[in-house]
Every structure is written in C-alpha cells, then in structure tokens.
Length: 352
Image (tube, rainbow, N blue to C red; front, side, top):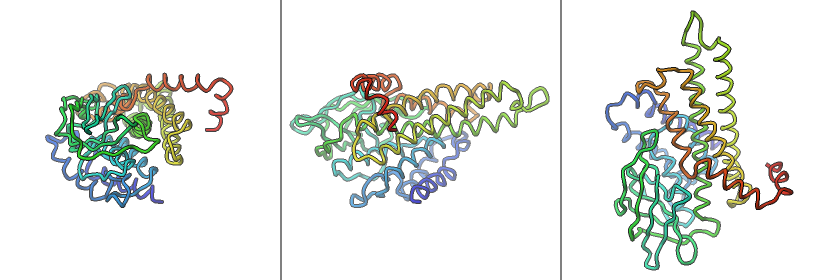
C-alpha cells in the first residue's frame, strides 16, 4: 500500500509540474523551481534516508517505484540521483543535506581515493547532474577499505557536458578536496555495490520511458491516416507495434525483478548481481530496439524538436551508459558464470 502512495504522489507531481509537452514548449528553466519544491515538500528526494536522519524512511521498493515514474515522465531533474546519494550516505550513517545531490563515481572504470589526511582525489566521468547539484556523495578507497564522503560540488572542478537527452553529465575532478564529512563504509558497500544499485535504477527508468513510448506510438498509429485508413491497420505496422510491446514487456520484467531482488536482500550477493547485471543488459537492448521502432512509426514528426518523443527516446538511450553500459555488464556476467562453473549455472538461473 505504501508503495502505491509513494508512486501516486510522484506521478501526481510530475503530471502537474513536469508534463513533457509543457517542458518542451518552455522558453526557460523556470519550471524547475516549483517542481523541485513540490518534490521536496513530499519528501521524495530523501526517500531512502532514514527518519532519524531527517529523511522519509521509505523502503527500497518505494524508491524503486519512484524511479519507474521518473522514467515514465522522463523528468529532467536529479531526483533519482539525490535519492541514490541519500541512500549511499545512509550506508555510513552520514546525514543528508537539503537540496540536489548526485553520486560519484558513475562509471565502473573510475576510481576515487581518500588519503591519510582525509582529502579526496581522482576523476569521475559522466556524473549525472553534477553541475546542478549542491553536493556529491562519494565512495572512495582508503588505506583500510572504502569510505563514503559528502563533498560540496563547488570544491570540485566540474567540466561541462551533456547526456544524449541534453541533461547535465559532467566530468568531476577531485584534487585533494576536503569532504564535509566521511565515514568508513559498511562491509558490504563497495563501488561495485553502487554500480549495481545505479544500474537497477537506470533499468527501471529505461523501462518506464519505454512504457510511455509504447503508449505514444500506439496512440499515434491509431490517429495517423495514410491511404484512407489508420496506419495501425497495416500488417507491417502491427508487426512493429507487437515487437515494441515485446521489448517493453521484457524491460519491465527484467528491471522489476532486479528491483525485487535488491529490496528483498540484505546484501549485494550473487543473486542480486545476476539480476541487476541482466536487467541492465536487457533494458539497454530494449532501449536500442524500442526507440528505433517508435521513431520509425512516428516518421519524420518524431524527430522534430517540437514533438516530445525525443525527450523519452534520447534519455532512454543515454541511461544505457550510466553505472555501466551493457557491454561492461555482459563481460562481468560472463566472468561470473565462468567462475561459478557449468554445473552451477542452471541451478542459479532456475532459482530466479
């Protein structure tokens, strides 16, 4: 019941203040202020922060439902990133500040370190919304393992950059940056844990965006008339719509299964790895195939800046790269299966 309330709250706010057509027609970014204020008043940015740290104290399932909603509306504000940052900070018992946040690193190849004097060093690429965020939650290696730190964005060097969907995606350089606070991470928290969590969230967002693409594409095919009949009546078009529906169903199932695995597990174990890696691979594949079909059905109008389709397709494609692209996860999954051996593969898969 709680999950429904959280998701309904998010979707109501998005419907009122983040309608894709309204944002597409906006001449400036003034809409961001009331949207973020409404999200903050509802407690959504700190969904995963415990109540004793002034957060909402909602469950992982609640937050995952919000991530799906963000995807369905292609919301271009760092709500999911702030949720991830609050979740990461809570793993070290650190309080979350008010305002927009993001997390680093966001790519599995990037490494950050904490020196003996507590300063942070390293370079993180593709950090989503870093230029919009006031703070960055960081997981970095120190002499004893890993620590989680809270850093002011203004203390870092942030290079301009954009994702495919024109959202901020920045390279952040930590040059002996002094964090506001830091503590050792719990034993199960590593950069790999952050990648798995981030990959699952991005999978949910991709699946949500694909759901909206399917709705838009079916509706357009029923409205568009060619040769005196709706294009949805043509067999080739029906075949394309069926393929798109199949990709959407696969993405929703894979992302949902990964979210359930994390929500019902006490650690990032082998089962969570299998689910999260598989979800990112399958959702990325669905994004590639699904966006191509959606644009093919819409034709030239779908590529115009006036149409809202691109707000969903470009973001779905861009989310493929965050927290490990599908090639990375396919390689890691192959290594995982090879290490376990052939005899353990089927029992592991069948157990899911």
